[in-house]
Length: 89
Image (cartoon, rainbow, N blue to C red):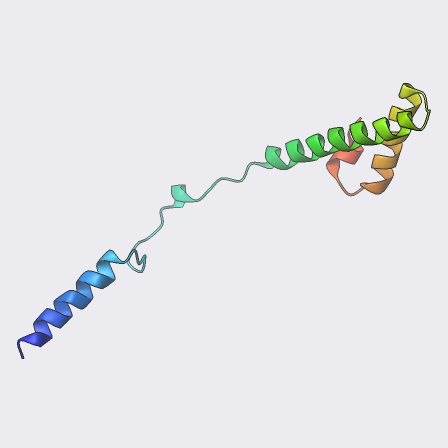
C-alpha cells in the first residue's frame, strides 16, 4: 500500500518532465510564417548559377560571350519553364 502513492507520484513526475506536450496548447502567433520571397530568391540564385555555368561551357566551345549568354538564357527558359525564374527578364 505504501508503494502505490510513491509509484503514482513517480509516474506523474516522469510524464510531466518528459517533454510531453499533451497539455500544451500552441498559440496562434507561435506558428512559423511562410515567406514567399524565399522561393523567389532561391530560384533567382539557381538561374544565375545555371546560366553562368552554361555560358562558361559555351564560351569554352568557342562561342562569343554575348551569344553564349543569350543561348544559355534561352536554354534555361526552355528547360525550366515551370519556374518563375524562367519568366524573369
